[in-house]
Image (tube, rainbow, N blue to C red; front, side, top):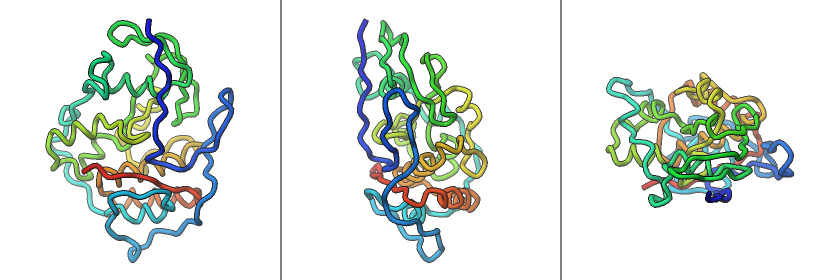
Length: 242
């Protein structure tokens, strides 16, 4: 058996979480940063290619507003996943690599990347998960939502890169299967996680949209702005994918 240690993920998508003891439930309340400024039409401008510790409302103002395209022609098969991951020689696909990287207690890794033991924290519903079989790996911005927001015109290679993106924390996130099914392909106008995770979720969603230059419709932006009002000190960090 091989033991994998949790991978430290660089802080590319958020500056939000408070430190907590390993035995405690992780804290997600924001701290520090500039006061929030509501999104206004005059504030909207093109997003820079990268930004660090930008106030949430400023980052939100950089998301282009656009009506969603028709979902005709969409299928999950348009986004090839899961591929062989960051280390094609380890026998673990992208999904398993994400699960391993987010383990708070590392599982044992057997042949064909079979996982035994381990412990995870499911942010969406604030629950401990004790078996990898109970986890789903969620796309922060769901594949269908990405299609609606710009990915419909991408190349197959870019859609595959999006579907397997491990280049930023929480582009992909391991959560309980039940919370992932509850979210499905909904945007923040139709679904949000439990209250304790909402500021972090909005930060991650905005960072992912900016990273991949995806647009948002009016209802989505309104919902994001509404929830961002409860996160006055939250900041966003991201780098666009070329």
